[in-house]
Each structure stands twice: as C-alpha cells, then as structure tokens.
Image 1 (cartoon, one colour):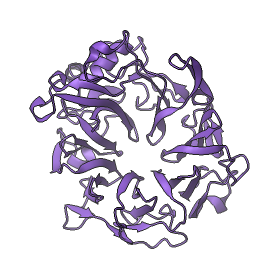
Image 2 (cartoon, one colour; image 1 turned 30 degrees about the horizontal axis):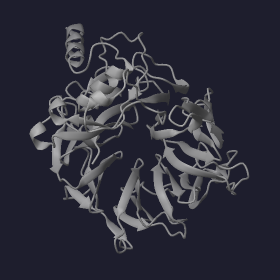
Image 3 (cartoon, helix red, strand yellow; image 1 turned 180 degrees about the vertical axis):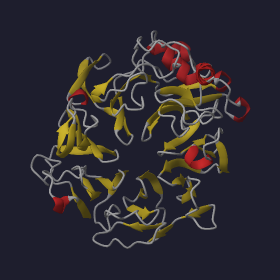
Image 4 (cartoon, one colour; image 1 turned 90 degrees about the vertical axis):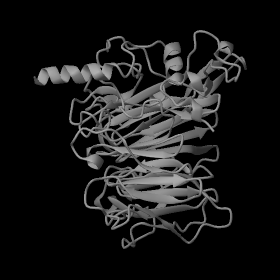
Length: 481
C-alpha cells in the first residue's frame, strides 16, 4: 500500500510538468507560457508539494494551487513559504504554517501594492510600493505578534521627504531595508534578532523587536544581503561593509580567532581587497549575496568580472572545487570569473558577468549575462531566430535534498549546469540538457496556460525568475511592469 501511494503521488506530479527533458528553445517557449511556481529539492515540510508533506526529497514539482499565476515575488524558509501573485494576493503554505495535514497554498492577504516578500524562521515580511514594511506570522507556533495578525514596522527616524524603500533582505530573525536616499534600516523580528550584532548598531544588543532603526553612517548604500546572523551592505562607491556572526569567516576577517567570532561594529570587510581595507581605484563591487554563513560579491576590476566567495564552504558553497570548513579570505570562483564571449553585433569580445546571484542556506544559483538571441518585440515570436537560446544557469553547493540537481545527492563543489528544470520525476534524468533562463519577452495573455487572461492586458511582458530557500530552488514567471 505504501508503494502504491508513492506511485500515485509520482503520477500526480508527472502531470504538472513535461515528462521529458527540453531543448533550450523548448525550455524558453514552455517557461514563457506556463505561469506558476516550480520547485526542486526537499518536500519534508511540504514546500514543493503541500498536498503530500513529508514525502521524498529530490523532487521536481509545480506547487499545486499556484498554477497559471504570474508571480511577483516568492520566498522560502525552512518550514514555510510565501508567494505574491500579479494581483497582489499573498499565498502561504508549508507545514510550519499549516501543520502536517495535506493542504494547498492559502491566500492570507490581498493588496495590489505588495511588491516583494521575504521569509524568516517564523515570519513573512512584505514590502509594498507605499514604503511600508509589514510582518505576518509564518508559522503555526504561538503568535509572536500578540493579538495582531500583522504589524507595520515604524521607521526611526522617519523616512525623509520623497524617500522610499527600494529593496529588502532577511536573515533568520532580522531584516534590512534600503531606501532611494542610500540609507539602510534594520530590525530584529524577535529577541534573537540582534544576538550577534547583525543589525549594525554597534555594541548595544538591547533592541526593541519589530522596529526599524537607521544605521548611522555617512556612507550611502545601494543594497543589503542578510545571512542567518550576519549582514552585508554595498555602498554606492562599490565597497562592502559587514557586521554580525563571523564563525566561518563570513565577514572576511582573515584567519579565525575567538575575538573575531562576532563583529558588532559595522565596518569594511578587512580582507575583501588584496590591499586590506583599501579598495583599488579601478575595482568596485556591483553585487552582494549571502547564504546562511557564506558571503559573495561580484567584483569589476578594469575589464575583468569576478565572483568572490568566503565563509562556510564545507558543502561546496565557495564554488572553488574544494570543501572548506571556514574561509576568512575571499576566493575567486573560477567558473564565474574572467570569462569572455564573442559579441557578433560588436564584432569583439566582451566580458561576461552575472544577471543575478541567488542563494539558499548552503547552495547557490547564478544566471549568467551571456547574450541571448531572443528579440524583445511586441510583434510576436516570429521575429526570433531559431533555435532560441536564453541565459546560462549554474548551481553549486549542498545537494543533500536535490536542491541543485534532483536524482543526485553529492555536493557540487564548483558551479555546474543543471538539467532542464521543467521535467517530472518520471523523466529521464540521464538526459542532461542544461537549464536555460528565459529572458524578457512579450506573450499574448491568451497563451498563458491556466491563467485568467481576462484580468491581464492583451500582451504581457514576462521574464523567468529564480529563488532559493534552505533546501529548495524554485523558478517562476514574473510580469515585468
């Protein structure tokens, strides 16, 4: 009976996605016309298939209940997940949210102004186009928001005239938000939210949870990245600062010492640049990311494009081909650095960087900025050359739950091209046609499978996006407004 139940689940999942690997052109066309949220990795907590929580790891599954939905933003914690669709409806699911019984994503809020969602251990955090930061319970544990179903965080000091929040990031129990004026506000979501000084307010560890306080600095920042208990900040000059936990060298302080295990003062990363604190005049960071205890930076120096990694690397998160317990000095990820491609339009070679770098707790995914032959034109797909190809995708790090490549369990110590995401578990996993990310394209709303085309414009500009959680990786189709 147990085997019969597993076979039934496998057949149900096989109906959600194509049954064989797809070519690059097929991947793009399929991604452009199939909205929804497609997850690979662990289903222990029902994040991939909440109708069968606790079932096998290493699955590929379309989250039931989200079929046909264009997704604005999605986020995963260990035990619960959240997604916002194109209408502003917030859906939550996972055993941490709904309990161990089979379920489908529940719509818990509708607000067209919501534009981004993040997930911490116990909460879901929302950012909207009115610069509000709202916190909702993400778990079925006793409500830490008191009698409130949601809390809107206050800013201290208040946002300035025409100052607005443009991005946010979240750790296990803290968040950081960036404004268009270059300020960063941080907040603890519970009593542990500043236990390692990850809020960047100095030696004080006593903070009032659920209040955003501005980091006192003369610098101006463009983005933040939160690990479990550390925080990175990127300045508009291309420097990287950090604070919080440093047990694995995730703040790039060099050789480990107990005195450097926690860095409560926000400061430039001492070993990010070869000259110590001093950034070379021709070098600057253009992007940052953080895993649970691993840090990343995208660096431009002259014509070169490099990706650096440091911190915990025992699962291959550093991407260097080695498994390193702790790494306090940034190392170059060879497969993502100093690369070039020939640009036929310019008849010259050009450096290759990344379009995006997405991190889970102990694994990472990068979408490369290689040229695509997709022509962005409202007149339709007929203007595109054939065969189509999109942007290359690589993954590395922990694969204990199949979050990098289902069907395998070994760690990826360096970036590798995963097979097509849109396959079923009954597909042929030995046929590894590499995953391609679908670039922006105009699609007739009537072509969007299972979508309510009556609520959409006749043509929609869509793009495939990726997100990662502790033990999962996911892809979705976003409307580019």
